[in-house]
Length: 305
Image (cartoon, rainbow, N blue to C red):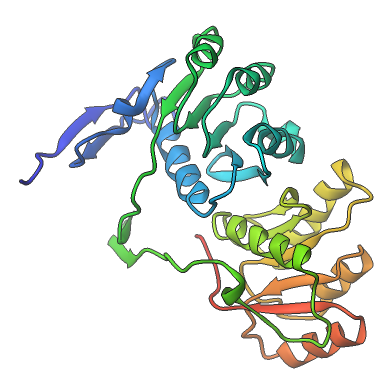
């Protein structure tokens, strides 16, 4: 049976001077998942869309903090409480006012940790009763009980030239997604970090760089107009919070020159993933071999515009 489209007016658009509404032909709208807090806004919905798509990449307990559609802290761990703390410590400054996405139930311990900081929204599949009561004390905090949502097969975007449509990229990012291009193979732990980083890179605005260690983002660069600046921004973040940590690097697009690889080597990175496709691929592979870097090429590039 065809579901009639619903048109729901929103407070305003991206800015208060813009009118906005949501049109949906789904059985449930985002408002049906809300269990507490102020009214969901246009920007909230856009951020929720980004966070849910990113979270769908992960099976183990994972926490993602989204700010302006980009993850600013992502971490996986054996327990969701640890994952949240790691994601918050990834960049606690940027996390201020962000949205927390969790793929496990929120218990009272986790609720109390979340409540210590200012967040706009918390989205999780379930909440314990006492956890819900603790979080509801923050009247403006939007709480959403969101089960696993199936990804749509096509995506669209409006432009002044018309609506664009494309198939959704549902390629699984796993060990089969990467291919070793140099002599030195990375350890299993580093390969797992590399796969973790690529899952995050897929959901950052291009140019995207993800530095991570122990399944925790330690430096992110995104939205820059050249890849070197994106890398420098990510390294700057790493040095601010994780000065002595080792890390792996994932890039959503290829490194066109050896400058990025040289910068990574200078900062102690020995495991790198990128899609390849540059006319300088051979030079980058040769330099990586010379400097004992484990360089992996990925199956597809991961651009997000």
